[in-house]
Every structure is written in C-alpha cells, then in structure tokens.
Amino acid sequence: MYLSQLILEHPPRSRALRRDLAFPYQMHKTLSRAFADQGQRVLFRLDSPRRGAPRVLVQSEQEPDWSFLGHMPGYASRVTAKPFVPDFSPGQLLRFRLRANPTKKVGTSSKAQRLAGKKNNGQRLALLMEEDQRDWLARKAAAGGFVVNPAAVWISREDSPRYMVKGWQGANGNKRKLSLFSVLFEGYLQVRDPGEFVSTLRSGIGPGKGLGFGLLSLAPA
Image (cartoon, rainbow, N blue to C red; front, side, top):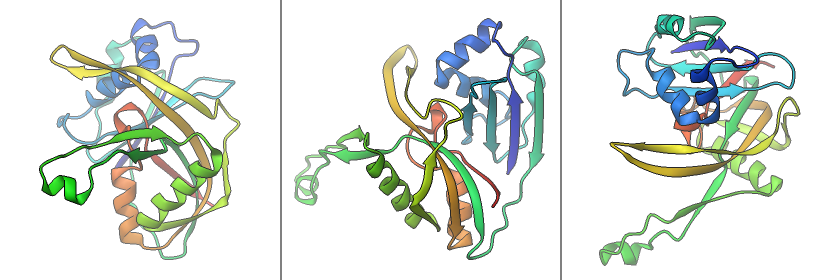
C-alpha cells in the first residue's frame, strides 16, 4: 500500500480546489487521476484544522503519480507519498483516526420476501446519538479484527466533529443529491486478528468511501 499527504492551498484561491472542497465526490475524481487503474479503490480523508492549511490523506494499493497536480495551481502546495507495508501483532495498541458515516439499515426484505421474489435493499439512516455511534464503531471493530473500548473513543475538537457531507454523485448525465452524516472518531484500538485487521485497513470502514469516509489512520500508541 501507499500513503500520500497533500497540503492544500490556504485560503483556497484555486477554482478547482474550491470545487473539490465543496463536493467530496469531485475530490475523489481528482485524486483518482494519480493512478493508472482508475477503477481501484482509493480511500481519502480531508482534515481541516481550525488553524493552518487543510490536508488530504490518501491510501492506495498502487503507487500514485501526483505530477498532474502541477497543472492545477494551488491544489497541493506540498505533496508526500511513501510505501506502507502493514505488519501488526495480536494485542498491539495503536492510536487511530477515522471519519465515518455511521448508519443503520431499515426496511430490508425478510428471507421469506426474498424467496417470493420481493427484494428491498432498505434505507440507510444516520445514527445521530453519540452512544449509538460508539456502539456502531465497536461492532465494526469486532468484525474487523480489532477491539475498541467505546468509552475510550472521543470525537476530535480539531475541527467540526459532526456535519453533513453534501454534493452530487452520478455518471452519464444522471445525478443524485447526496447528504451523508459524518463523525470524526479518535482514540485507541487493540489488534485482535492481524490478518482481519489488515483486510479492514485495506477496504476501509463503513459506507460513503467515495466521499472521504472510511480511511483508518494509525499511529504508535
């Protein structure tokens, strides 16, 4: 894997940058230009501190080529990229950061309905209560090879901890309006199953990955 960091112009004067900051799906399309295989999964997260320039973190399977940013004035004032070989051990303690879209699905078809040919994928509803958000993260951890103590997870005060990510997504002229609830989690996790954990790290956590959700950042505890 590869990890990249793009330090953005602050304040943003570039028209392209202002567009991408306003519409995360457009930022995803811009970032995808760094890869020969634009169909691969690219995880990213925009961090916007109250003071200083915003930055974009990008995780990819392929080595990125950020040279095209040289033709986008102001988009990235500083760019770094480095390989990352995940190697974890059972019980290892790590600090993490995760911007996620915690939701629950309602209205899905029962087994009897599916057998009768009546399929309904249901609807995702945002989890607005903090206790529900912490429980959501704990469930994702249990399924992803690691453990978190919900009481030891906090929401960062570095920037707005909760907000709606809004924009448009679509192709071939067909667009749909998006409005996804966002929560920034920080805290400590413990690796339970290194293999499962690496798989979770590669695939990201939760829905909305094309809009900047799901990237799990790690640092030594």
